[in-house]
Amino acid sequence: MVRAPENKRLITIGTASISQLGAAGLVAGGGESALALARELVEEWQTDEQSDFAWLMRSSGTTWPPEI
Image 1 (tube, rainbow, N blue to C red):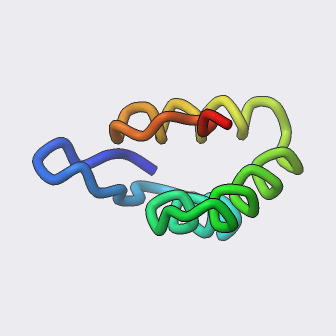
Image 2 (image 1 turned 90 degrees about the vertical axis):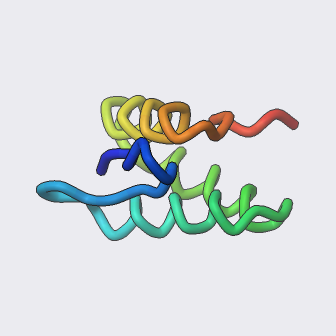
């Protein structure tokens, strides 16, 4: 997954897991319950998947992990 710089939307190049796409959608949707669910999903991933996702979120202008 990468960020499209011109519009800050996420696009996929190559492979991305359904879980990563779903978590990105939850984060984009906002709301406390959506963010809590996204955080729960991410915590189930391996460390390298978590850091890739954190980079992706930060590169799109989203604070990750969300501040509590």
